Image (cartoon, rainbow, N blue to C red; front, side, top):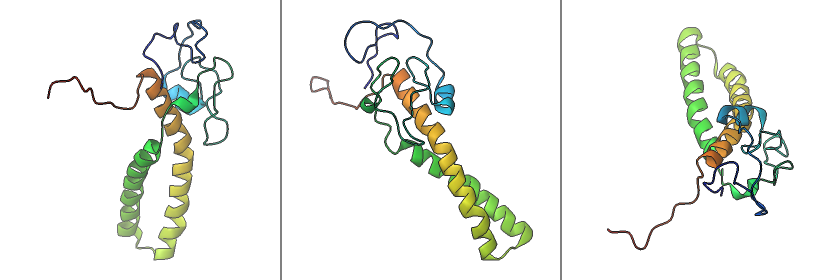
Length: 143
């Protein structure tokens, strides 16, 4: 994971401080695929897959654990929207089932795929900015 050091002191390669660069906002990092450290457009290697490292500043993207978080958020958000719209269409127009399938399956698919890149990039940037890492239990802590 990323260390909590200031931007000017972070260096994933361990070769010393990197120059301070204005980090992009979480939304910009997600929308534009920007590296959360240097702001260059190197976050994604494919449409939905992260690049292994930033080719500009050397930040190791593989050290972050975005996992299934974005997919879970999108399932809840888009699922709620689709169900509400489907109920509204059903109560207003009473279409046959095949019309619902024709509308909502492509709408959901396009919505998830279109939003997943944004959500993955934003979650990666949030993990970097907050120095998120796996939780640990302190054996010396009082009960």
